[in-house]
Figure 1 (cartoon, rainbow, N blue to C red):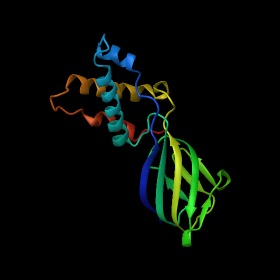
Figure 2 (cartoon, helix red, strand yellow):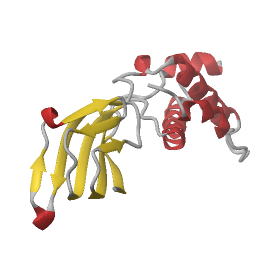
Figure 3 (spheres, helix red, strand yellow):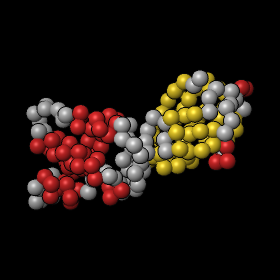
Figure 4 (cartoon, one colour):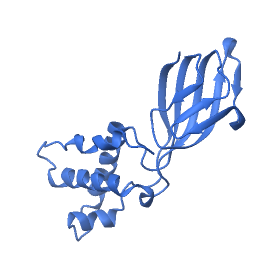
Length: 175
């Protein structure tokens, strides 16, 4: 038994998920007048994609908390998980124990503890994302993200929404 409690981004990506110059070629924009707008649209499309799919595109750190712990398996709600930076278990009377790597295994997006704790809470801080730059994001994801930004750019002011179902295949993406 475990209960998902909360998740919070600890650090934000340091780079954009798309290269602005490549995107401008895709949009057929030849000047820099709309650069700030395009950057804003890249950020908006990235946030929509990440929220909809559960993917982290560019490296970022997340705190994921569970309560009422009596299991050894934790399927993390965001992927891909690159590494676990900290795993802290809070037992009765607020006794906290930091688990080192010898006490768990990271199997893709699942943490498997070597023992099953009976605990009040577990805090997992993990690094998620494909890498530190847009070059690390798989081409199929970048392609849809570019279409999303193009839609936002070309349809701005019309209220016409992007078809988020374009991202559906990414929800079940195996990492």
